[in-house]
Image (cartoon, rainbow, N blue to C red; front, side, top):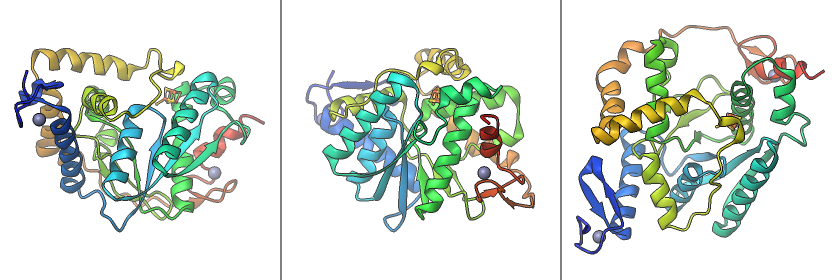
Amino acid sequence: MKCRKCGERALVTLRRHNASFCKEHFNEFFRRQVEKGIKDYKMFDWSDKIMVCISGGKDSLVLWYLLNDMGFDTTGMYINLGIGEYSQKSLEKVNNFAEKHNLKSIIVNLDELGHPIPLLESKVKRQVCAICGTAKRYYFNKTAYEGKFDVVATGHNLDDETARLLGNVLKWDPAYLSKMDPNLPEDGEFIKRKVKPLVRLTELEVGAFAFMNGIDYIKDECPKAVGATSMLYKNALNNLESEMPGTKHYFYNEFFRSAADKFKMEEVNTEMHTCAVCGLESFNEVCSFCRMLEKLK
Ligand code: Q46
Ligand code: ZN
Ligand code: ZN
């Protein structure tokens, strides 16, 4: 296979684009997709202070690497979830990466705060990923608010987002379908704008970029991810994609082109409170995270 751009030996073939690329031109293609995502969805510009949510996996590290390389003002934010060896290894990858590229980072340690995920899991009667999601959302919002960031960026890719879209379509849940936008506006003073600049790239493409650019990330999956329904949706979409290259891209883009508007929720004027425990803005008198922590007592 030869590179579509220069005719040199190609290292990657992208069936959905019917093209092969050498390292240099794959990097060029990849970067252009990220730039297009940022521009098309008006995510941010060079004046914004961006908090990048980092897990130590390939998506978040690739995103951080690229945004920094493009000259954006980024700070990585990592939450040590306290999930045994998995958390230790991922923290190591994040620290090494930040040091190598001379990047600013903020680390929140749930062990030190007294509520690592395994402890919450043993006390709260909810699925572990729902508990973890509530904790992560809380600390991402809190850190972005306290650090006066303009925008919060996550490394979700096309596979993540089409799997989520498929799950939401199967349930026809308008509340969830209205939140698919890769640029979700801020909500009040406390919740900052959330963006997903890798949304035009597949998991495979992000992996290839990480490999070609020597980005060292944690390859292990979180041990709690076993049996997650999102994997079912990803597998189903991968089967479709291998028979019909371009399916994921089409499914995602067509949703925004012809259906997303129909799910826009009416602005509801919900009365906001100040959480009686932590003092941050909340829908209820005590926020959902603090209610969860009360179960530890
Ligand atoms: S980290 Fe947390 Fe994920 Fe692990 S416990 Fe579930 S939600 S799987 S992205
Ligand atoms: Zn080339
Ligand atoms: Zn609270």
